[in-house]
Length: 148
Image (cartoon, rainbow, N blue to C red; front, side):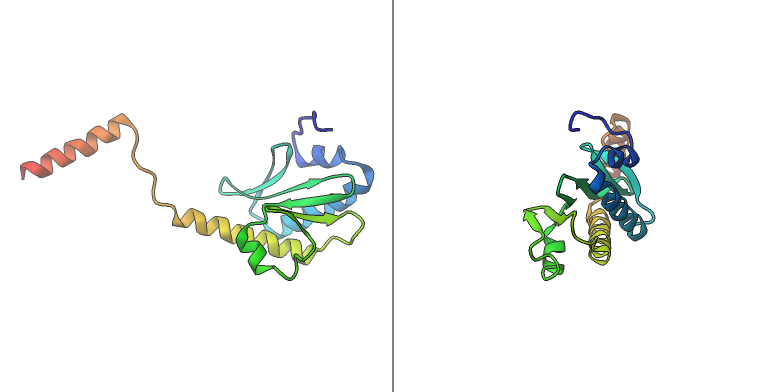
């Protein structure tokens, strides 16, 4: 399975073991409902959801569990009580395939991540001008300003 190159989330889910498929479809539907403007895709050979080109959330299926990434500090601190026993590593939230899909929790995770990504994007300063033509224009403006 690891050597396959998935073209879509449909391909990814179809390649998973039978017990995981219906669970992953439910996870997918939950994320899509929580993030209706997100674009679905495949990145690192697992499903990803992006808003305005920025990664919001990944999910992946395994033989006995599925995971959602990333579990950021903000998500962990906000949902601390709900995530007890689910944090597998620094950035992974792991759910058992045997348990009912926690749609409310996944919805909250997705919306928190979307808000976080949006805030980060707003906080970033505008990109610096890097083209040679634009630099020449800026330098010319500075020279004219000095002459005045």
